[in-house]
Length: 411
Image 1 (tube, rainbow, N blue to C red):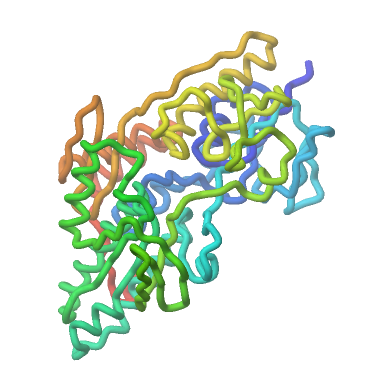
Image 2 (image 1 turned 180 degrees about the horizontal axis):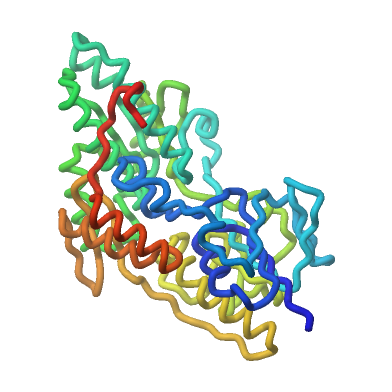
């Protein structure tokens, strides 16, 4: 019998978990430009050394069984008429009966001068490695006799965007830098600022968790600049505007977390989209004009989900099970399903000692929340054997942060 050819583009939460649920349901092929999955909510802990790469970035060949084919490649194009996918890394063309679009968005620099060239993205392991190295290099340049005000100027880091990612990253960076100052007995102190166009931090979240976030930002000594627009990013500085007044600062690094946009592949795909370029999908996750194409995650707007879930890993994680279930039903000629997606709860890392967790309508923070966050995310890692290995590592070996040591001592 003909086995349906299912091609899944993108190996993030939506793509991987859909693949795992579909294993054995046809000729399943997963395509990703990376050789590993990334549990993105814990990329901040990877930066700080609280977790290791293998904990949050297992290779696909460790996660997928033998009845799923994995192809590492960028996608060159999608031919809707021929129902085929062309790859950059080879002359091979993948033909599909069912296609899943789960590539995720790309960093959106919103046309700010110099942002793409001079700021650091924070979406991959390599980005975290680069940022950590930049922090260490900046620390290593500080002379013991430098005046405190000059130290502050040389050790200024700016994070653009005060959503969950910006608040998690800024508190983590600040805690690491202040710890390094103590260990190295450096004069003065570092400066970490987060810049947000809106009027509040974590604008998509409720007041309960925002209180814990604001308290953590204060305790980590992160400067918060709301109602502030970035005008320009240079190799060694940033210019921003607040209430019509511009200010320029020298920086040791600028990290851009100002949102996402659709990649060229989705941008050029001739299907129905909204004004922001997001794919318009049915409640079954299908494209209305191509019922054998399913889309989920950052690139699609799901019509029946709590608004705060939009663009989150949590939504893609939830959508994956519905996607796999509906693909099986589609291939068997059965009725497809719909589902309303609610928040499963929030769990934010806020520095190296604290976190904030919102569950069951109640929020709590501090060191207990940090432990709860590790426990929660252990349960959401892919495959039971990976969860078991990682859970054992965190329980027996601990999750102590790794200090920012001089470059020659960094591992």
